Figure 1 (spheres, rainbow, N blue to C red):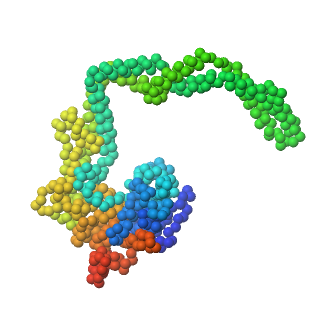
Figure 2 (spheres, helix red, strand yellow):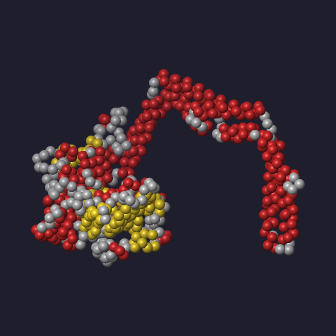
Figure 3 (cartoon, rainbow, N blue to C red):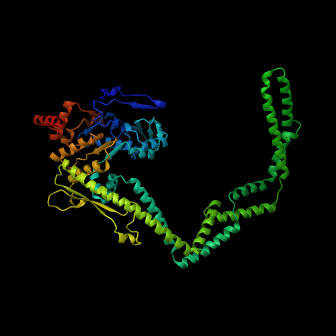
Amino acid sequence: MAYRRKPPQEIALISCRAQKRVFRFLPTRPYNLSQRNPFMLNLLKIKNVALISEIEVEFSAGLNLLTGETGSGKSIIVDSLGALSGTRISSDLIKEGETQARIEGLFLLRSNKKLLELLDEGGIETDNSKEIELIVRRELSSSGKNRVFVNNQLVTQNFLRSIGEFLLDIHGQGEQASLYSPSTHLEMLDDFAGVRELRLRVADEFSLLNKTKTELVNLRGDEAQKLQLVDILKFQIAELAAANLQTGEDEKLEDEKRRLSNVEKLSTLSDESYSLLYDDEHAVIAALEKISKRINELSGYESSFRDFNEALNSAEANLNELAISIRDFRNRLEFSPERLEEIENRLAQISQLKRKYGGSIESALAHFEDSEKRVRNIETADLREAELREQLTKRRGEYIALARELSERRKTAARKLEKEVVKNLQSVALEKSRFEVRIESPTGDELNDQDFAQFSARGFDNVEFYFSANVGESLKPIAKVASGGEASRLMLVLKTVATISHDDKAAVFDEVDVGIGGRVAEAVGLKLKELSKSQQVLCVTHQPQVASLADQHFFVDKRVSKNRTEIFVRELKKEERVEEIARMLTGREITATARKHAKEMIAAAR
């Protein structure tokens, strides 16, 4: 099944289900879905970001390469892709002289249960088909009000970050430096082993274990301090118990104080209101009764007035009820200096307790309950300590059982990872290299020790990658033996083997081939090409050996126009690719020999 080419200008927004507006896109060149994964980033649009006024880039399946001079703006495009996957961005990125910027991407994704659940939680409608089409849009404003949209629905950045893992895998410049830190090795191994759910269970058990241990340590505090604390707590409990605070009591007392302080004014207002309603010669209720009687008679001759009878009767009933309420309120009004003094004293007491115990009656009551609990715990410390010891032993056993299971799965996965990495290192010109995953775990005797130092939320394993690039050299930690170029290639292999699942999202590499050249650069390019058979790959490169392998080649150019610097992106045609690869080979002066070599490289890549 092949798609026909469609010019960029024909890409349009059309109506879709639920009247949401989404992109419908036809890829730029024919390809066979049996050979290429069709789930990918189809279209990227950037407006008013940094030096970009407006660009629109159609990507295809396979290997998409971006090349250009250093500083031409390739990293801005990668950063924009990061923004679409949930990376935080600042309004400082808005192009100078503009007030708004926009980054927009169209993704075609394979449907899966977790993604559907996330979209449903975010209120994003889908038809539960095998394919999900998402338009992600980030809008920046100079006022600081940045917004995120998914399929034209406003969402939070946290929501975008949660679905971002289904959109793109981005591997930035200098990321190989993280390979020198053993802390990243455990994460890579766990990604390869697929043990994230088990790790969450281990983390939960560790949290419970740590909580129980902390409570036990606190319980074993200095005995003299405990006795002093009991005395303080008992005094506070007695003080709060005697006060007998009630939720909302202060508000009720303030209302009553307000009434007592204004009895004369309330009496006058209620008398005048009652008179206007009932007692005066022109009282409202009496007048309303007359009006009601007249309208009733009038409706006998003109039917259109009948609809008003019910409203008049209702108004009359309401005013009667109001008059009775005012009368009863007036009869209850009584000024009591004694009660006013009593209220003021009680409010002063409540205010003092609120200041002392957290600022509100609710916080004071919470302190009362907590203090009672703490006293009980201290007074029954021996019994509680025995309970906690038993609980600690149980939770420790549960944690160790899960951590052991996690450790065994890591060790099994480590052997598989070693084989996969060594096999793939051959494809990036590291044929003689060796790679080993070393896992240090506490022994059974160490686990019987009460020392918790080796326990953590990630289990009790220490993981570190060992590497040797040359024959005759022993395996050593990566930080001690891997050069920059070797680390770049090793990171590429680890990313493709350990952390990239060869699934439906695009893999983005920003100058992963930095620090290498020649045959090694060609080997890295072939590795990227191999990866692109199972998922879309977007790569920024300065290596002609890599660029020659592109399925789709884009040139990023920075030009000065009308005293303004602008960044442009265009897809290169066949002859333009030759020129660009020749430039990458020789620099500014492009020779006939360089062009010939470029043509040979492109031909060899097919």
